[in-house]
Length: 162
Image 1 (cartoon, rainbow, N blue to C red):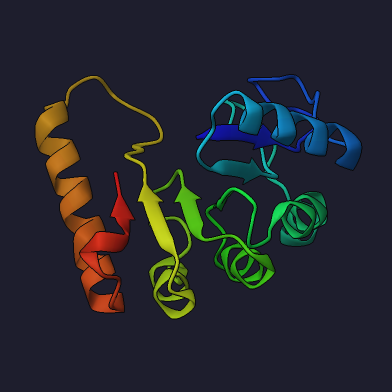
Image 2: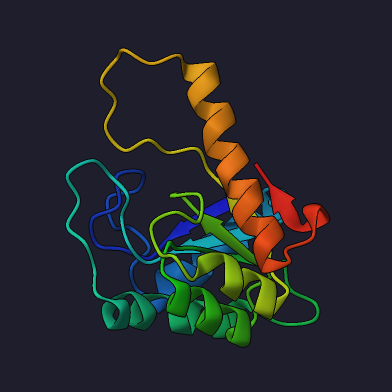
């Protein structure tokens, strides 16, 4: 998976791909380097990062998705926890939702994934840790809840990546 952050404050690339030209060039390079899928993100998930409005996030990812999507293109993933961004991205050509909050931050995400017939990557994320947890037990509970949400929404197990 090639990561294409189109944010001005990305922790991984420092905002190097936040223009359409730079995003397209980076996407081409990742494809040449062997990426099988491109993950496009419009909101930084770096610690201490500022939240981005739905419209600002969409303004950042819309053009890269529409320009990079197509029958001969690499599959596209949208890195978002916002239901409406996931829906719009699917309509624009993304096939996978990469939700760093595991479908827990926006209660409509599981339904959006099911309704758009998208794949979903569910990431374990506790937010803040207190250090006094059994990590394996906590992860099992987290993913158990995520699978319950997916089942209730009608997301096929074959559409879930962890």
